[in-house]
Length: 635
Image (cartoon, rainbow, N blue to C red; front, side):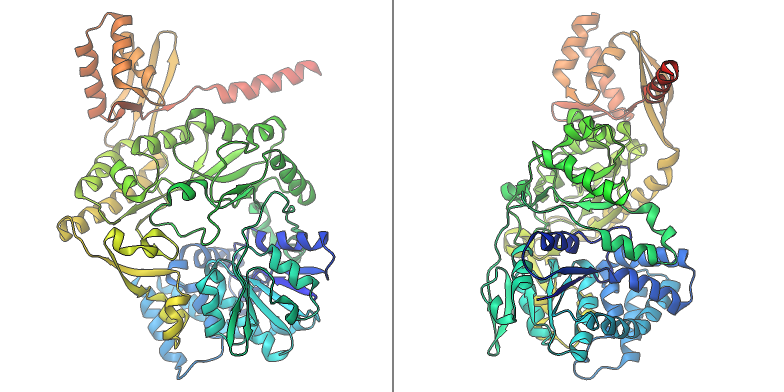
């Protein structure tokens, strides 16, 4: 069957869809009919600007906000809900008013709410025109990838296709169709011919080689309709070693036709994949994480494929910024050393565990990793134990210090309100934050959610959780589908059945934590806390707002102790060595360490301590100048 793979809104404008690009590449290697792709989120971007008659530069921000920041309120899905077939009695005016009130209650600005309402009005016209164009391709089957806010846009386009050509097949896949969610989509939306659960290589290969839907009954991971019921073929966990490099040609062809491509092209990063699943989740799944669904088993490509993959991607598109979609960086054989040795200016991104040390982070930076998403979540070891993160507050602080030193942008979030959280865990972080304003602040501060597939969802009683049903947003996303809504939902309302501290006290502490992080963000750019090493001397510059103590020159035992705790060291061992070398009584060294702890120079946790200042060697610029000078001399 001739298959068209569709990437609907609200995929990031700056990322071609790796989901469909990898499957298109798979089609070039097989013997089935051609597989082509449509990046319709770029079509929507163009249509919306013209429909709303708005400034393209402004709408880029609106699009990003809806796609990235307002997913938790269901905005991207709701906008396309008006293009779906109605269920029961539906008053559009009332629907718009209630949803607008819902957004206002959650702090969405009046201007943005007005824009959202206008986009919902425009979505049916876009969907109709797009369906006409897709049907005209004469494709036998249309496959939609659905993650985050892509489910309802995909459903709206699929419904319009079936209205025009009932004989064409429409399939949905992606995270919104995994396990029971996919079967719920089939029950709630009868125009969908099938869904693909789990990884899609086997299913797409089967579709492209089949002559009719009847040949798909045994294809892995496909759910089909059969005599009024659903026929479920279980997904297969795929090996990733042989998966091809994604083909992004169609994305760039469409981007070049966009009148305002100059707003997007400079910021494009090419997604790639080196692994699937999560090796930490296999061992001990984080309590709140439902990210991998049925694909938790960890599989990775040999590290040697990293350089090959990035070279093929960047050479073919002339883009040097790349983006790993892996849930977690491989512990070993990850290819970073070879990438560092390749002497190319490719930059990339990885999700990593935050317990990486100086050697591992140095290797990341040498390989061109300029941004990471570490699973920090908290700066309290007690909270991290509750979340089963496999790291401590010490690890997380060391990670942030090293990223600041190496010029790596650390994108992380701060979580609270997890079951078992105590006032002390919040107070610990409140005391710490003024001392680390020079380190990267979290992007958001939020309460822990209960997501499908997470331990919180699968075993709520174990954590003292009572599920209260789907989050409120799903009433607007799937109106009139009360029976299926729970199965369609990914995030759930919940209550903790065991309160271990006064409720009002905890609320107050969480509000204070949010406010303190807000101040951290404001002060970060002006905050400086660094040191430089000299011969037998350390110079400390402490210019952190409100807590900074200025410039200090450390000699003798102070110089030795400071150096021994850079990037972390054992307290007892450091004090003993410094005392012996300098002839300073251990009591005096301990007293000095207590003073440093009180003024936030050092963070002490158990038997370990960490200097919170950042090394400023001044060597990066000098090294580049020396290299340039050497080249000039050779000429």
